[in-house]
Image 1: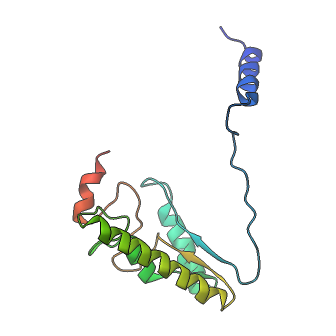
Image 2: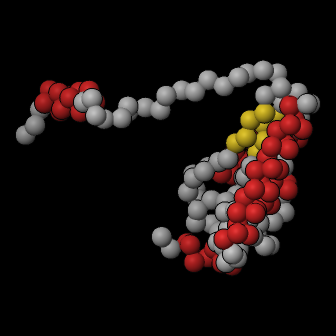
Image 3: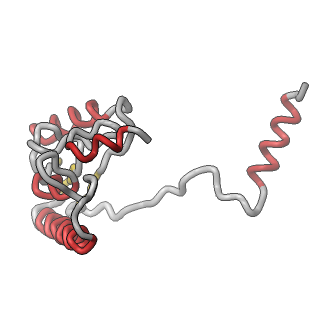
Length: 153
C-alpha cells in the first residue's frame, strides 16, 4: 500500500520537474478599452452545455444587440448545414478551402473594425441555432450529410 505522504511527495516531485509544462494555463490580460471586440467560440462534445450558452448569448443579444452580436454571414462561413464552411467535411479543392479561409478572415476583420467604431461587442461565432443553416457545431451532432461519417471517431 502506498501512503498519502508518498503520493503527495510524488505529485510535488512531478510538478516541480524542470522539463514539465506548467499544470495551469497562464492568464492572458487583454486590452479592456471601451471599444474592445471579442470573439467567442464554444467548443465541446454534445451534452456539454452548448444549449445553455446559446440561451445566454441569445438573451444578451435580445437585451442589447450592441453588447452581443451574432454575425450570421461569418457563422455561415464557418459552418453551413445547407452547403459548406470551414468546419464542414470538405470535398472541394484545397485552393477553394484556402479561398474560403481568407474570406472568413477578411469577414472577421471587417466585423472587428465595424464594432470597434461602434463601441465594441462580443461576436458569437457559433451556438446560435436560431440563425438558419448554422447549428451549434458540437461533436458528434453534425446534421449536414457529409459530416454524418464523422460521428464515428
